[in-house]
Length: 161
Ligand SMILES: Nc1nc2c([nH]c(=O)n2[C@@H]2O[C@H](COP(=O)(O)OP(=O)(O)OP(=O)(O)O)[C@@H](O)[C@H]2O)c(=O)[nH]1
Image (cartoon, rainbow, N blue to C red; front, side, top):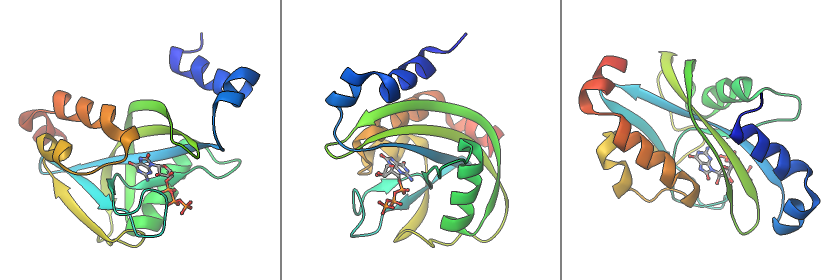
């Protein structure tokens, strides 16, 4: 049986009333929650793109014909020069911006190899989960940040990292 989330997404794409309500394209986005030594990797968006200068998690738009997991691995490689392994799906949500709707799929990932480089961002840094809420992130990320801050205590992160 389809999950509540999947049913909502199917409605988003196919229900004419839903389509009329939304402004602009519907974009599927894969994002990586990479943990190391109890801290999470965040990157800062460049100027001149959607939501310039805000902090976010590495990731990006799914290409046509690509699975969301393949998209995640590709985006991490392109944006950080690193290879990760996907551990598990953590959170999914759709969010309506003024000019587009994004469907975010957030996965816990483990760093396998590569020196991290901010190839597609201005900056990258590692941050403790309880400090995430103090950084300016896109509006769509708020429930994800709250879930991360709530669920990941220092101890449990250290076990994962
Ligand atoms: N990578 C990433 N994108 C996010 C996050 N939160 C969020 O709302 N987004 C939105 O998801 C969309 C896809 O992100 P992207 O990183 O591929 O966008 P982009 O800079 O390539 O956009 P562009 O190709 O139009 O310049 C953007 O509209 C971005 O604002 C996040 O935590 N990480």
